[in-house]
Length: 83
Image (cartoon, rainbow, N blue to C red; front, side, top):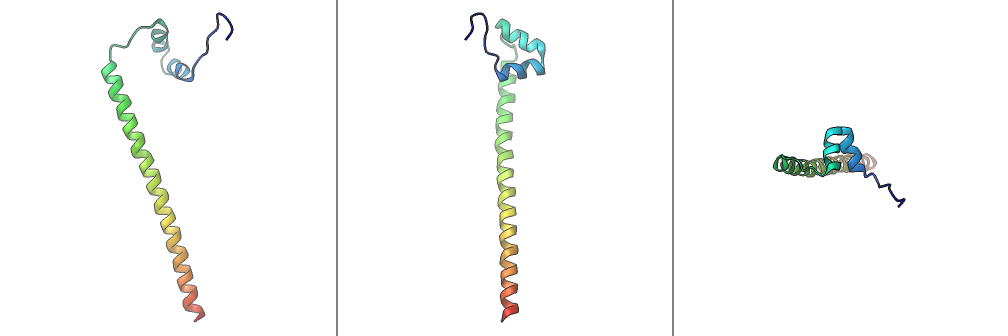
């Protein structure tokens, strides 16, 4: 690390893009007064992300089952036509 320079983290860039004033407060070491609201928001987003992952997995499973059913149907119809 070069003396006098520091690493800029991605979260810091995100804070700056969202709100320059929030970034400035953070750099000054000033704590937000709405800590409980921020924690509740983080908890909500974390729970929502879990539900979103579940939906993605369920959609994948449904698609896989539909494809398997179609393949089974095609094979069953094909077997009946041969006999």
